Image (cartoon, one colour):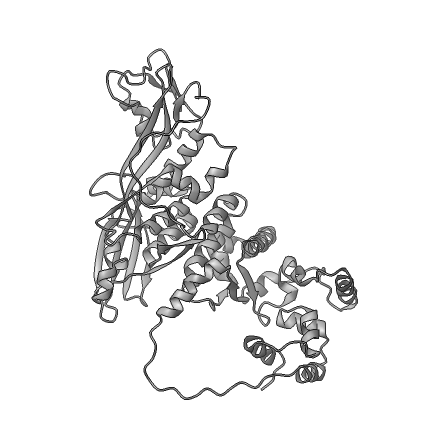
Length: 533
């Protein structure tokens, strides 16, 4: 039985010189295998060379194997991730963060060309005292890889699959399990990757399609090179990393099974990976104890990988923001974010500029942004809007409707009150909404429980001051009567106060009736909204 080349072939010309019988021919821009010449490389190599050397596993048997695949003997892999079913530690240094941005934002980043014609992306660190730069290489196995030229590197960047960011985070999680990840390797196979990314539940994909996808996205993070010039920070001396691989792809082991006709079927893949030199400085446990390196990690939620694989096509902007917030929220929950920053993260600088200049593009970008925010909220990353700069009249409709009571009678009262108000929820947005959003902020994102773990760890690692501190003045507790009096003095209805505080009307009513005591953060919010001293 001969092989054929599937439609996923990108025409890289890798397989053509590897075929010992000359069965692979190029017809125009497409490649094909002559079944009369193809003999599975028998007498030449133990395995079909076209499958092994193809970066996307495009050659497949002309007649797919039926039935279940038997369990085959494989190389032992590293222990599974997500043993608690929720999250796992992962390397979260700035090197990993910026590489994740490259895999998600791709050509949206400000890439530049150096004097040798090589493409690079660079950003300053530590107020300009140091720099971190990235380049792209196409040599996956060379000991000293060379960065690609501008045109070929841009083509490679445009072809990056955003799902490769999930593989990048899986590598970063495996690296934290090693004492010296820049020297030690970890081994991961297709069955583990299927579980991490939720591909084991995709019954619409064949085994060959899953293996092709896994091989493709597993190689893409290994095409990134980094150069770091880090200044002295406290006791830790400055250091430099020059054109080092982000991840070393040491080997891809292909697992075959032979059917009764003698044709070999690809049934599995095993990857041997090692972290680059950056890990010596940013993921070094012993070095951190000795004060000469960092050990920076966060917690990778398993649900994030599932979300990435579920919405990457329809909501790419939401995926970009979700992965960006994974690193941003590691530094503490109370992270204020401006809307222009989120827009640049989600869609890139150029698309934001286009939206500012063209009305139709602006309307389309607004709809997409609000839809992506709703998708974040659906997966537990709920934005808390600043009531001053991001008032209800410019908030998305789904956010306005989030406080509708579940009780039918209360819901009816809610809509009656809304219909009699001067600014019903369903009113169209005010003119100049785009310009208003340029100054809008999101106070923070409410995180799911399995995301909060990394914030708790970060807070516990903060150094405690040994200086004596004066006892803080206890904030007075606002009573319901005080709130009602202040509201009436400002001639505000319960509905209007609820909109200003980004709360529900029933919440304001219960506070004024004294049904429960207000939390300190809500007291501070009401003091700010009502101008109370």
